[in-house]
Length: 396
Image (tube, rainbow, N blue to C red):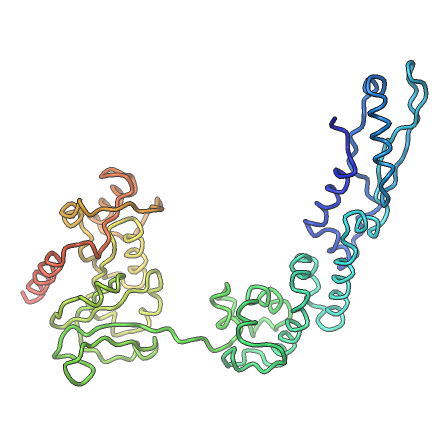
């Protein structure tokens, strides 16, 4: 039968709980009750044809407390007059919570609301929007309020998260709750103390004025005559972003490759440096003004994502050129092609005519289905030959 059962009624109220409506009303005072629930009931013909089933159905509804049943007198020429459920109402929030067994959770939430109202009333709208998240954080809620207190007293502190001295709070706690803290801090901190140009958990420190781990750039000087370190050791160097931006490298050519083995195996070359690539993170390279004066060559996979990274690099270095990302290299290594898992389909506006033609052929599967030639699969002799040719051209 498709008549509403007590389980169906509980499910209707549970949906209110799962959407946060029941708890939100405890914050904003918006009343949801009394509330009429949906009731599917027997038709007139079912009353006569399935009279015993109807009686069982009525008994099941009457056996459950916490909702109010409005009965209606039905007269039928076969079975006479009978009272059947016509409406079902939840009259109070307590009845709704009791019906679904959430009274204890609601009381806990109420305690958190009152604590917040006393200490940080400005974040109450967040509690109204995310009540179930607040319940999930119940054990940590006092710590979060303590962090908010500290941040209000120390806006844009210029410290590492490790240096915050709050009882029960440590770096990993803050890092684990960055998303929640962002939503809360934005409500209580003065606008001028929040860097609104940044967002997301990865930029939490920058947004609220904490020191962040310095970005690091790894590179190798390929010309022994321009070595930055004494001796004949391989010039594999990692420095902070700031140190890289102030580097006196004296090189005229810079190669960027995404593969570490390629980076390590890159042969010596006059007037050159190779950088272990940063994927889509070229912003940190752009701060090095000296780099804008160098010839830049990007070597990535020959696939749609490789060209997308090249396109992104040119947003910061419009003069950057591709290296070994051409049709000849692709076709010469056809036995080494693999499948690109999730090819891109969007247009890339910063590619050269030849690059765009190859990119279009790859994304439209004109050469094959989801083709990728990974940079580390290119024959090393092919790489050396290309570098020699490039070096000769630069000397002309």
